[in-house]
Image (cartoon, rainbow, N blue to C red; front, side):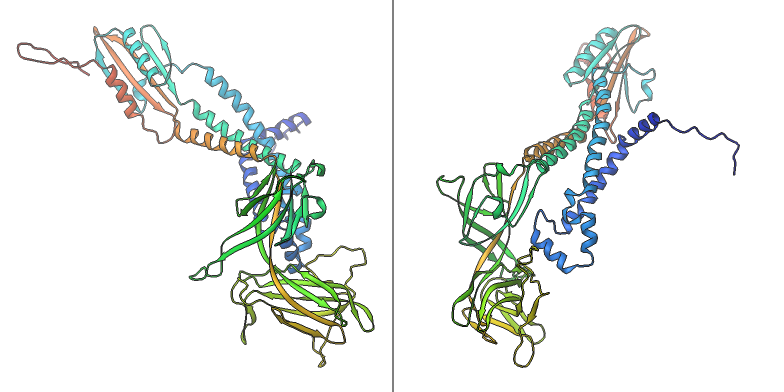
Length: 532
């Protein structure tokens, strides 16, 4: 339907670019992008991230096979490296720069400008006082200027029939606002520097075992786009011991009260050995690299022997905690087992219970997270583990495509239940399985974040700017003096430019300082005071 009005002409490319730039650099857009950045960070704290804990991310994938393809396409397992999060990040930086630079110019011009001249009708301002004096207007104005400068106001004096002084204070409030905007930009730059030139790696180390800071030693490694692996700090360490204290009473019984790992380390080959205890928020720092203690768990020592008694497999196996009682899941892969008819491959999958307990209602469970009565329960398989097909496998998952369950004489799948230092015989001459002992392991995050100090500086700037914008109040005060009826009429008025500000005390104090003292009346003398 035609309205009879001519259609608006289409914008030229230059006009469209200018309009887009104004929209992007508006304060509203910056706030929206900041909100979207905070909203986009929520999946990073809810969904296991590959860069933080690849083991939990792998477990999540196994537990949610239908959601996993969708999450991978959206980059939700690596939120902070995803395309959409980076786009919000970069747009926010551009928007902040576009907001900041024009405001900086306006603020600079405002700082250099003189306080505004006194309004014609001072009586209309929220705070207003008048009084009369015998002093001439120039003297009153000079006294007012001196008093206001003593209160850290910048002043401007005008002379003439209506002599006046204009004073302003609190112009640093806008500097606080600008500083806060700059701080957000500095924090973003700090995170960008850390993401580009830093790295994060994860490694599980069983107590008494060692780690050397080389790429081949990591379980997972996430380098920044500009990180050079040749710059890895050449340190090494051994996890000598791990101590954990569990709460035993009350509503929080079973929770870890505190845990720490004792390390012996060398900052470089040939360097003297040093000792260090690390705990949550107390990492080991070697050069610019930090080693954080993230979590811990159990590694049962399992030995699989062939029929002739030779060892096919022996060592600690990392089991991943499933709940707060440290009921843990894990697999054992034995690619070199032997039986009477020749070689075969065995696989075991099951759960470890630090403090084994059993009820008919719930079945086996762990009654407490400490290893007071360790036991293990596993299903046994034989066949092809799939280790030779060139496809990488998780050490925490058993590829069952080429495996068959080992069955008992009655045809039911064989379940091996072992207490500490106990063995179980496998059928068909497959040998024995023994639970020899239990060790603890620690999950460590090794990271190098070069932008930390930049980000910390940005946080300090943000707090400084926020305090300035909250507690600095912009105020203006004017004092006008003119002769009327042989005396000088003085007007004092003020304006608080911040919401909720009370300027009555400031105006009253200045009026009191300028008002002449009342004349005193004593014996033998008469007189009257000043009127107001």
